[in-house]
Image (cartoon, rainbow, N blue to C red; front, side, top):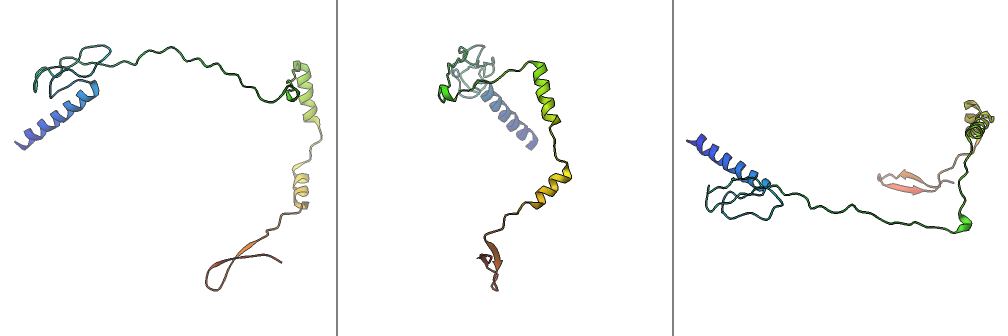
Length: 138
């Protein structure tokens, strides 16, 4: 008996959720809200033709959006048009960049080690009570 009662509650719950998703009514009769096509559920009482048809709402059709936009910033004096190089000239320019003398990794590392490093202006130290104290180096 408990199984039958539980099964009935489960079927009723699933039926109500399916009805809510499709836009039809199961309990309470009448017709649901307007739809754009298909049949819809109706009926006057419990079980009175609740799922006689399924109504699917469609999205309204709108024309494609078109945005006219113009972006202008700066002045004519600031405008510098980009240049176009023929393929042969572009290859020659790229090869000139590659042929330029580059330092080796060891030379770059040595130059990096010779540059002075930034020193900290403040230091955080701990006092005897365990509190952080900001100290300035001398």
